[in-house]
Amino acid sequence: MLKFTCPDCDENVLECVEIYATVSYDITHLDEDGDFDYGPTNIEDGEINRFQCVNCGYILKDNNSVLTSNDEVIAWLRKNCNQD
Ligand SMILES: [Zn+2]
Image (tube, rainbow, N blue to C red):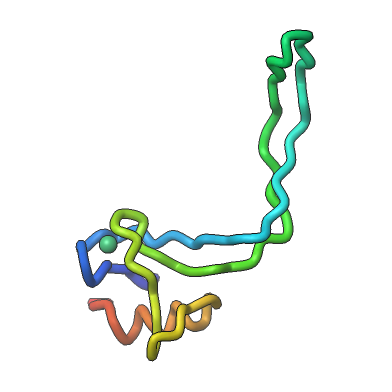
């Protein structure tokens, strides 16, 4: 298993940020006052925009190009984070 260590803040959690996603949910209660209740959220058709540190927002880049694929992230982790 590969480990992520943020170069700026030493956080170990990496997050994936997607854009252009469609978000939908069932409306489980239609109140006359307009106070609706909602079921679980469904997210579809997103496009990966970036990978970043969950704590400080450090964005993973290689040669100034933002990483957008898992393969690029694996290569970056091997090169930039201590895996011992
Ligand atoms: Zn960080």
